[in-house]
Length: 229
Image (cartoon, rainbow, N blue to C red; front, side):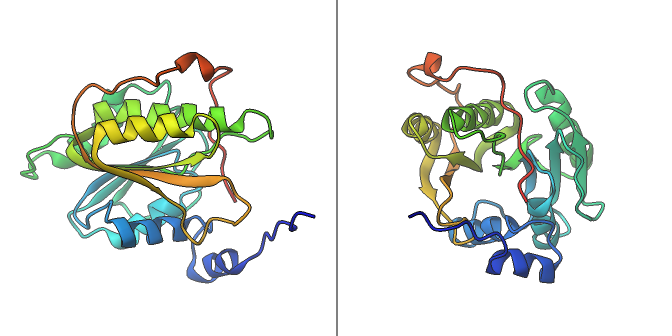
């Protein structure tokens, strides 16, 4: 008999105590502690950022030189400082030029050599139905990788969530062809029964990203990111 889902576990309670809007904050904290995806002085974009726990982590972690930009279809409810720029929009419909606009404004007169982000992060997941969720999740990851080509500076880093399933190996393989180092991890704050893992890449090559070998396998409507509790 499967174990019942525990909603109010230690990370849920700790998030309330620490002032995070969601337990997912601890996923990014652990991932970054282990893999160093985000430097303290980095410019970072969070794709599918609502409700904003990852932006809260960045707000507390980044140095005065670092900045974070978040975009989501949903309103971001987290309280963040003015070092975090919030956008409401669809990652499929918003042109990369608009996603880069906040960072270009910040870079004006800052002396940085790159007009792109140092890191792209994403905790997006589709609205789950129990059928084809892994394919919808893979499509979101495909979009993240596509946007890396436009948003991420050469040598930059990336981390994104995927729901494990049939297309997962293809997405991992594409990530490995795009970054000098790549792999997967599952932080402690991910529930044991959850299919989620995180794919990471370090050292973006800056080359044209290849498509999945069998793109026709990933079908259906464009998935909409879900705001996770």
